[in-house]
Each structure stands twice: as C-alpha cells, then as structure tokens.
Picture 1 (cartoon, rainbow, N blue to C red):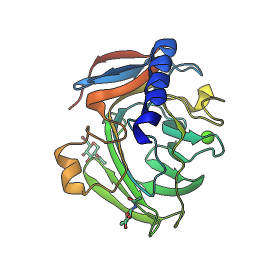
Picture 2 (picture 1 turned 180 degrees about the horizontal axis):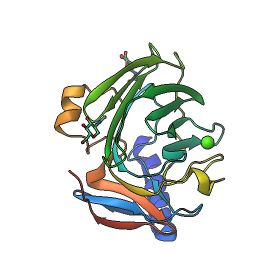
Picture 3 (picture 1 turned 180 degrees about the vertical axis):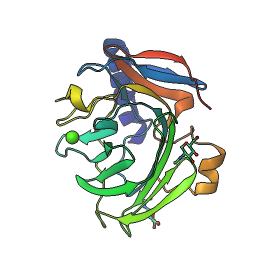
Picture 4 (picture 1 turned 135 degrees about the horizontal axis):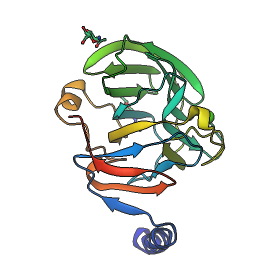
Length: 223
Ligand SMILES: *[C@@H]1O[C@H](CO)[C@@H](O)[C@H](O)[C@H]1NC(C)=O
Ligand SMILES: *[C@@H]1O[C@H](CO)[C@@H](O)[C@H](O)[C@H]1NC(C)=O
Ligand SMILES: [Ca+2]
C-alpha cells in the first residue's frame, strides 16, 4: 500500500520542480540578500517532510537596519494566517505567533549586529522559549493544545496575509537571512548553540527553495 502511494507523490514533486524552478542546494556559508524594499521579492522554503506540528524549533540568523515593522519568517496554511510568524513590530520587540496568537519577547538590540534567533514551542504546555544571540529571553505560553497545520507556504522576505500572497512592501524584509532551520521537535539549547543549520523539516545544508523577484544569494558576511 505504502510503496504504490509513493510513486505519484515523487512524480508530483518532479513536476513541481520542473515547472516552478525549485532547487535543492547546500547553502552552507551563504545568505539570501533582500536588497530593496518590495512586495515581490521573497524565498519560498519547501519542507523536507510535510506534517502537522505539535512541537517545533525554528532558528535563523538575520541582519537588517530597518526601523519600521518587518517580517522574518512567515508560515501560513490555507485556512490560517500567521500559523507560525516571526515579526518585529518595534526594534527589539519580537512578536512570535502560533495559530495566529502572539507572544512578545523583548531584548535590547544593536542595529549593527546580526540577530541569531532560536525559538521553540510545544503544544503540551503551550510554552514558547526564545533565544537571541545565545541568550535566553524567557518563556511565555500560547496556544496550549494546538496543532500547527502541515500543508504550508513558508516564506522569508515577505509577510503573508493569505496562502502564499497578500504581501505588503511596508512589512517586507530588507537585509540578509541565513542558516534557517526548522525541526519537528524541541531541540535542546546546547545542541542549537553547536549547530543550527540541520533542521529535519528545513535544512540549510539541503535547502529546497524557490526564489521570487529581486533576491540575491552571496557568501554570508557574518559567522
Ligand atoms: C511533543 O512533545 C511532547 C513532549 O514534550 C511529546 O510527549 C509528544 O509526543 C510530542 N509530539 C509529537 C507529535 O512529536
Ligand atoms: C550594543 O553595542 C554596545 C557598543 O558596542 C555594547 O556596549 C552593548 O553591550 C551592545 N548591546 C547589546 C544589547 O548587544
Ligand atoms: Ca499575516
């Protein structure tokens, strides 16, 4: 039963790779640059496995000197806006959404420093734990008992208000993003500090993605 079902799925994947110029590459040492404000530049990240999530860990590094609000990571399902969203409303104020509910984590930040963000969430307790540049910013609770939908559009560079669209240039990301990883479980912080680019859902070393608009890939500037 299982093997007969795998073939059409593989066929479908190839078809979508051919028709939408999706590529899988090792992004080690590289970053996506979003060089200009727009409502058209973004990278769509395609997970290695599509599954609903009761636990997850998201890590990434970002540099920007924006002082207006901006999106860092936008994960929408067909039926839910802000299923997972990392959004900066004011400098040093990280809005972390699960299932369109929000927890806010505040940290003093320097505009000239890149941010290394790791955040995890577990449904069982609803607890979200936020780390910035290797420092814990504490824990907050949201959406206890919730399950994040698996069929998602995962986008960096823009903030979705629909399934893969409704972008607003005034919430777009301008800057650089690298080492993006997503795991389907809570990764202990000791492990994250050692390596944060090998998520089992989004893996920077084998990144399946599709670039849209003005996005440039270059060697990263920061560690
Ligand atoms: C989520 O994590 C809890 C423990 O924190 C575990 O009991 C549960 O099985 C996990 N759920 C999944 C789907 O992995
Ligand atoms: C910001 O930069 C200044 C000067 O380098 C430093 O003293 C301060 O600790 C930094 N603050 C943060 C939050 O990193
Ligand atoms: Ca949204």
